[in-house]
Structure formats: C-alpha cells, structure tokens
Figure (cartoon, rainbow, N blue to C red):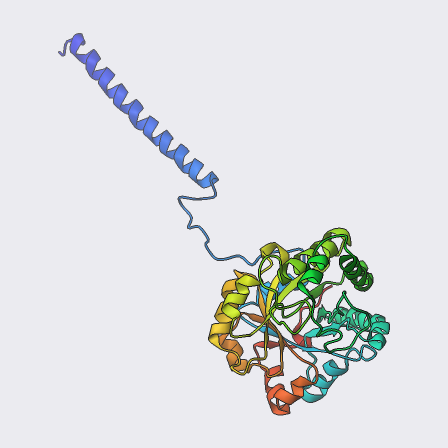
Length: 357
C-alpha cells in the first residue's frame, strides 16, 4: 500500500501536466483563428499581381486594360471642321474598318472657328458610336490676333521672353487674352461634359517643338508651366472634369532629356504621348524612354505619318493608341499596309471597342 503522502504529489503532477496540454491546444486554436481572420496572411499566399488602376474615366480605364496587349487605331481629322469625319471615313473606304479613335481640332482660321460646333457634334456622334474622342488645338498666339494663319504670323510665330513672362503671370493683358481664348474652347468642352462625354485632351502638343509659339521652352518656367496653368484653369475654374489630359512630345534626338525638362508632373497628365516623325521610326529606345517617363501611366503615339506595323506593336505593346495625321496617312503608308494594320488581331477598330454605355 502506497502512503498517502506519496500519492498526493503524484496526482498534483499529473493534473498540472494535463492542464498545460489543454492550455497549449486552446492557444494553438486561438492563434489559428486569429491568422484566418487576418486575411489569411500566414496561411494563404498574398496576391502580388499588379492591379489595373480604376479611375473616374471609362476611356482611361479601357486604355489601362489594354496596355501591353492591344492598340487602338486612330486618325486625325485635320480640316475642314465643316466635314469633321472626312479622314475617318476615308480609312473605312480603304480598310473596311472604322478607327476606334476619332480626333478633331479647334483650329485657328476663321472658317474653322466658325464651324467648331459641327466638329463638336461629330465628337458626340463618335462617342455614342463607341469611339475614343480626342481633341487638340492649334491655337493662335495670344500676343497677336485670332483668327490667324499657320505661319510665322500665327501658330508658328514667336514670343519674346517678356511676352512669355506676361503670359504666365495672372492678370496681365496677354494672360487675360489667353484665358479669353480658352474660355471660347471651354464652351464646347462643357457641352460634351453635359452629355457625359470624356475627351482625351492634348493641348500644347509637341511641347519640345520650338516652331510653335508655346513650345521649346524647357524648365519649370517654360512650356510646362503654361500647361500646368492651363490645366488648373480648365479643371478648377471652368469645372472641366471630363478631360483626360494627354502630355505630348515629339521624337527629337533630345527626347531622353526632354521627358524630364518638359514633364508637367504626374498630377497634370493621365497619358504620355509621343509624336513620331523622326526618320528613325519606332525604335525601342524611344519606346523605353516613354515607358519609363510615364511611370505606369498609359503611353500612346500622339501623331505620326508612317504608322507602325502590327509586328512592331507586338514588340512595343504598351502603345495604347496611334493617331496618323489626316492626309499624311496616305503619304506615308500604302493602302495595303493600312488594310493589314487595321485588320491585325492586336489592333482595335471601332467594331472591337467596348462601347461607353
């Protein structure tokens, strides 16, 4: 017979061991439950797949979704504004496909200014048909007169440094005139806003192009300052929240420097575009420069004469749209080349667009 004084310590030891085991099991279950409630962070692999940004714009969201996969086909309708789909229709006759991207211009001559409403009506039609709507503006020099010509007395005129300082200083005569000219354009853009039509807006295009009165001024007080001021005036003062801002450069040999010298800042643009007119064509260096400069935002071919081939677009798949320049389309490309491009599987024409309703 075992003495009581020896049994009691043994029983206490067993009970203690059992309690420790039960406590550990409960703790393990609790930790497991906590892990599961914390989005499965320790039991489920984290999804690191990059997400397509969701913006306030259907058109911009679409461009994000096709970046790296497909490119929307487009053509500019340079003039006259009385027939604002003449080059779009020409592409259909040539290729059997309508472009998925339509472009118009507010322009500078009196007759085209008088017919801006016709051009805007076409923008409405194109949007309702499911096309991307793009607008630009060859503006007259606000230090001179409007209307004007496309020469050194008008669009291609120069501005002195003193005039530029006045232009970019609120309240001066030139600045007031510039805002008055912008106001006239805003009347039409507000029409589009009232109908929930989004506009890919590419003002002060080819900012590094010194032939235009607005271009060729690098640095914080140069062309990019005018672009920033125009953005803030149109968005904050005029309430044009339907504009998708396109920052645009030309493919000069200085491009690698220009993407920094003319960059208005990520808050001021949604798409980075390159006008390809240099004889070297669609080099991988130009493409990589734009991809890097855009820092994740969509890139596009803002203007061109000679179009890229479908094979080149496969090798440079982040170009989200291309826009050939009106009549130059037929100077730089054969009908066979146009037909092949517009019918390529990686090129989006109007019949492949998702629609905006």
